[in-house]
Length: 394
Image 1 (cartoon, rainbow, N blue to C red):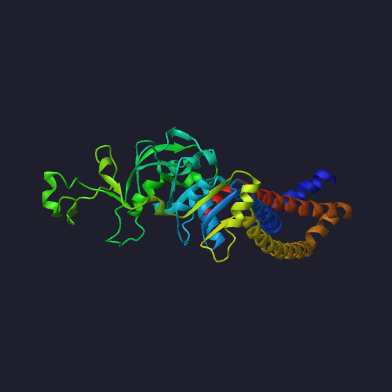
Image 2: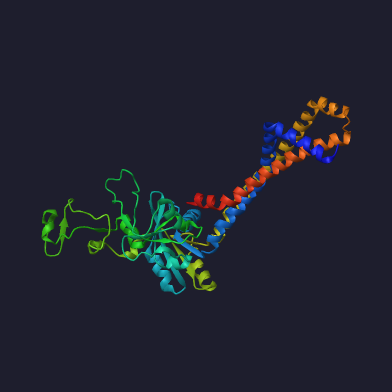
């Protein structure tokens, strides 16, 4: 019997026993794919997180968890970190050692982070608009490309801030914000965020508000007390939950903006010497602030991750050996149960060499099927791994 005939018999046996063949392929595919998939996913995590961390020189925040500060400043996670004030940003700028970009990451819109920034952030990250333009006044916002696609947003639409507490009766009203632009896609957490000016973020927080002009005669019923220097309004005064061209002049802030809170600041040192000086100024363990280098913090996290990864891969290798051993047992039992079949083939003139060739082809076909399944799994990890990492960090 020729080699093609032996292959023909092996192929028909595999196709005839589909369920058995499929289970063997899945077992072999899983044992081959899992170690490679875990390693590939770990490399994807390292690459995706490393790009953003390496592009951010320093991050300033309140003393506390450096990991929480990292996740808040780079990935817009609403972490339980203490705020700092805008004054700290002004001090860094005034020192001449570099620039600082303030961030206020506290609020969200239906789960998507609302990030208070100034326009320098867009230059720093290289963000440009695909549609429309950046915000130009109080109450405006721009949205990331992925968020705009998911919600069908475009310039001229509106998004609402979500209250921090569902039953916060005394809290701030949700703010209706005008979308002025959609950012170009970057494959980063910026694609999932709503960006507003710092003043708009403070407006959401309640540090600014707008209402009817109490000095006008129309608002007389809403006035509790009036004198030459002050007007006290009643609870009936209508508060604005949207900034428009008509009521923009009715919004005002209270207190010194330098004392207003931010969650962190991206610090851009002028040079290596300036970076060393800034780092030294914030190394006091009794101080109120910390200055972290995101790439160093991420390296520490990833080193722990890779230690766990090594243990997982080692375990999966043992699982793979066990799966291979089970496959050998299955093939051995299968060939023993088919002894009469092989004896019949021998009786009609099939040589022992050809019978062994049939068995080898069956094992080869199952192996090819297992490798095909493993390749598909690894390909899916490579294809969807980056997006899964980004979603996990949101």
